[in-house]
Length: 241
Image 1 (cartoon, rainbow, N blue to C red):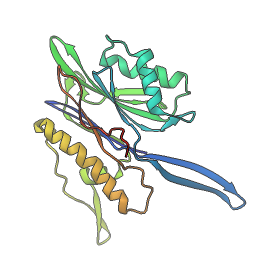
Image 2: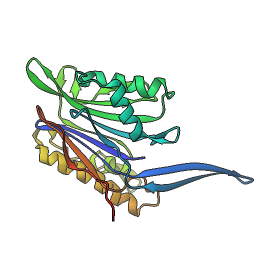
Image 3: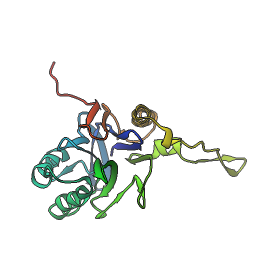
Image 4: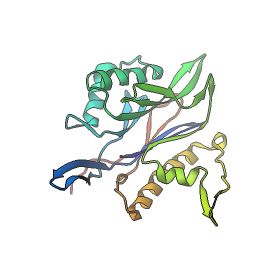
C-alpha cells in the first residue's frame, strides 16, 4: 500500500507520496494459510512527471507480471502520450494501456495538469481506478472548479485526523467537533506543507501501531502551476556511497 495525496488550491496543484514497496504473499501448510508481509524497499517511485506537463501518482498493485510499475509508466508515456495530448484525454489512455493488455489490475492513479480553456489555464485533477474501469474529475462539481484535497491508499490515519469521529462516553457515541479546513484560502506553500504533514504523520503513526508498515521512506512532492513546467519540491535521487 502507499499514501498519495493530491491538493488543488487557487495557486496550483500538489501531488505527494511515500516511497515504500511492500511485498505480500501467502504460504500454505497443514494448519492452513498464513499471510506474510515485508517492507522490501524505501526507494520506490510513485510520483511521476509525464511529458514535462502532467503529474501522475500511483498506489495499489506495485508491479505487473513481476515488473515494477515505474517501467510501465515509461512505456505508457512513449506509446500513448503525444506532445499535443491534453489532460482530459489522459484518464482514458491510462485505462486503455493498463486495463486492456494487463487484465485491469488493482492499480489506482491520481492525475493532475492544466488545460487552456477560453484563454485561461484551467486545473484538472483526476482519480482513475483501473480495476473498476472508472475515472472521475475530483476538482470540479459540474462546470465549477473547486479547491480541496483527495488522498488514496493507506488513508486511515489521515481520515481519523481530518474527518469527523465519534468517541465512546459512558456508553454513548458522541461526535467530536469537526473544524473544517479553508481550502479556498490555502496558498500553494500551505498545500505543500499539508501534503508533507499528511504523509509524514501517517508514516510516524503506523510506526508505533501494531500493523503492517505500508507507508515509509522519502516523501516526493510535485507541484504544477499554470504556464510553468512541473516543479519538484522533494525528489529522491540515485546516489552511491
